[in-house]
Every structure is written in structure tokens, then in C-alpha cells.
Length: 138
Image (cartoon, rainbow, N blue to C red; front, side, top):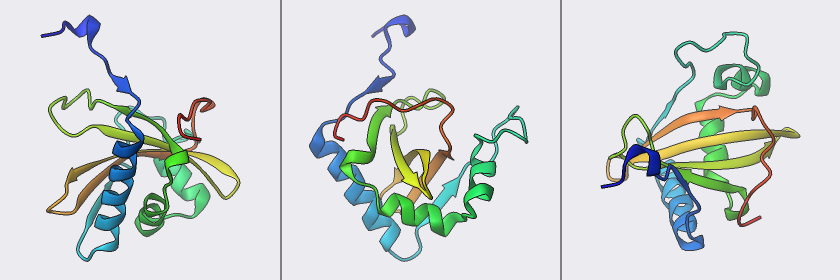
């Protein structure tokens, strides 16, 4: 077992893994009765933070259906990285993407919680706090 100091948090998934994730998310979000949970607020987050999910959604005029549409339209070239859920390391990984929406860069971080039950959790959907410069399949 690795010590926490040697724990690898982020990785670059293979082309095939990213394609599979995108296709699975797309299938879930095209099905009936899917559940897309959005984390709109984070504990301790400044309510005026322009880079929060809540304020990004307001700035874009977006709701959950718009987020679902953006996730359905993800492409391999939007992929940034895959990362471990630090609060729940035994749960599915988070997948990070960056898209241009309404001429603005948007950071998207989500996981498929359960394929059969059609559950997706979107942790982040906000303007990035720092420039995203590395996209392995761009």
C-alpha cells in the first residue's frame, strides 16, 4: 500500500477510456429518468466568487438541462485529466474537461456514480480559476 505522500491523485486516461466515459455519460443523459446532481455551493465558498459553479450558471443563464446538454456534447479534445475523489477514494474517479461556452472557458468536473441507476454527479461547472493549458487529446 502506498503512503499518502506517494498517492497519485491525477492521471491521463487512455484515448479509449475517455471515449468510453463520454459515450457512457451521453447514453445516460439521453435516457429517461437520469439523475444529474449539481454541486452548486461549496462549504466556505465566497457567495460573490465569480468562479463558483452557482455564479457561473447565473452568468451563463444555465440550469441542469443546459449542463446535461454540455456534458452530452463533450469531445475527446475537451478532456483535461482524471482525478481521484479524495473524500471517497474508493468511489469512481472524477473526469475533468474544459469547453468554450458562450465564448468563455468552462471547467467541468464530473463522475458517473452509477451506470445502471443513471446517476451522474457534477462537482464543478465554472469559469476556471487558472488557465487550462494541457489537454492531452486536443
